[in-house]
Figure (cartoon, rainbow, N blue to C red):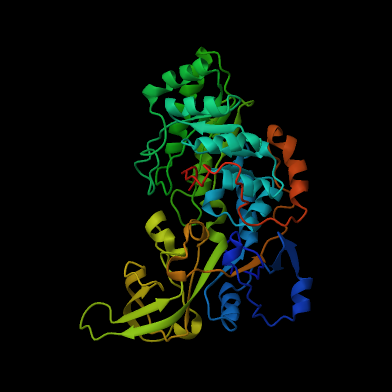
Length: 480
């Protein structure tokens, strides 16, 4: 397998500690050899593997000592994504969208690599800060926030936040008059799989009134943000929306503001075969930024799936099978130990269509039409319908690639089922040894914060904060 794909290792901590159970290694290496070829990150052992490691063999080795579903997570894949971003978008500082995958191991790695963070709730802010990340590396990118979250964010030192309507400005002014606000504008996301402008984003005729409202309330307007939607097939949408953002800069200047921040949001593809590709999108963004915004303007983006989608592979166990006598249609029903209420929540919520992979020892079996169900008692818990697979036996395995985005983050424990085992490898630890430099404005605190992050802390789950019972988790769409 090439380094551009993603893969595994054994962990003792998950972002929800109640979900995790350790799983012993199935590799032939002795435990001492594994330790010699590993490092620790966030109290988790990460095994070093070759860039061309055999993903299938690695996963199959683990199945020999396990009968429960598990994830294989290749941190080298995430490093490669950071390197590509910093190379192709040198002016754009990445703010990882925590909601996409809040795994503390991933948060810690990204923090050490100089990535900043887009948070949508106080719980996400606390999680990121528990990794040693300073408040000035966080943007509160939820345009419609709970009042209690605004107050708590201020206490945590996070004052940069988005808005898209006048009522939100009134709320911010009442809860944190020292906030630095960023106007979220709508985009033409008609060619995106996940459209966000139906929920968030000011329309052009609201730009001037909202800027004037900031003046009236004495709030500091510092910039503009947008999101083009996830899974967009339009390679012109970023440059077009940057021109709309330029309009806001000009309106704000007429009201006495000197804006210096542009947030280009998320929506960047996390898989290699997407069209337009990330390099194609970056090629359109770079000249538009330089044409429209002077060098002193800070530029940030909010990649989520871009960073993590390819880094995860999920292996599931076929624990039951039912042969039917249907003359047409599916005649085999399989039941596996993860489903749409768990890791495959990406099917209903994120419009994904995971494709099952088989090990070599079953590929040559007779092909049969089948449906693959998850483990719950709900008939809607269906992973794949009317597909052709080799005839599987109970105890066989399937695995799925590119399962890092909006999987564990939106999974539940419905019916008591959930995947809780995580295996970490690193197939390219050295690829970020010499990253292209961040813009000067982003270097001021990143070095110190990265040093803080490098010391393993005991944190890992969302910290609790009962100082404001009103502050429960909120949802935003600031990535994808």
